Length: 170
Image (cartoon, rainbow, N blue to C red; front, side, top):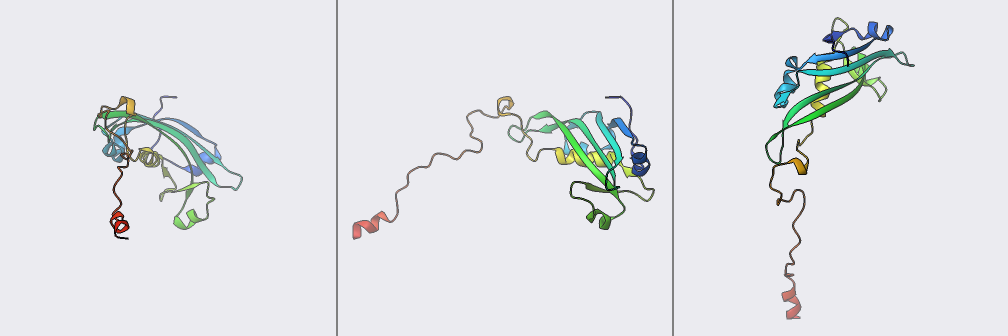
């Protein structure tokens, strides 16, 4: 990937008319929510964004991104590195009403009063959604006790039927 710093906001309409393709990185220091959700984050988050107009005449922003974050394993409480990979496809809209009219295969993103979209915030949102709900190592790499059973129920112990007493009375 090219080692260019990406702009934080961009005009999606002009970019789509020019069929702009941006490839570069964002500094993670500006992504406070991502930093708060992880122990540590790589300094650079690589992103590739393409702008175009589809066959319906809608402006479309699509792209990919990757970041390496350090998370806490929920089995052993040790830190481990996890690569977050995102794919996104958005169409900018003016308000929530216009978002309802978009085809279902596009996510809506509202542009600001200047007609620009905050790409860094958009990428941060997608990275936050890519964090696993329960982050954990692979079992072979985890330092949790090997004799513990995860997600398995113990063997059923045969219990006496409480109604057997009634059979004897009969």
